[in-house]
Image (cartoon, rainbow, N blue to C red):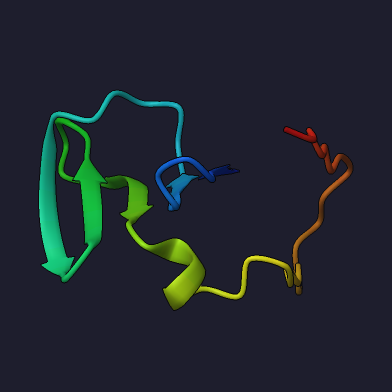
Length: 73
């Protein structure tokens, strides 16, 4: 899973799977789910993210993660 924040557009994209999106549906104002060909959610796009999400606070709970990578932009 990858979290990508784009400050120029204030959008947060949560990449859930490394599969191609073939369909997108807006589920609420500024929140779009991307689906693959099998109908599984592969990504979440959040517009105006700084107003909807605490971008400076991330908690991983109950996840076995051997690698956490942070890329400064």
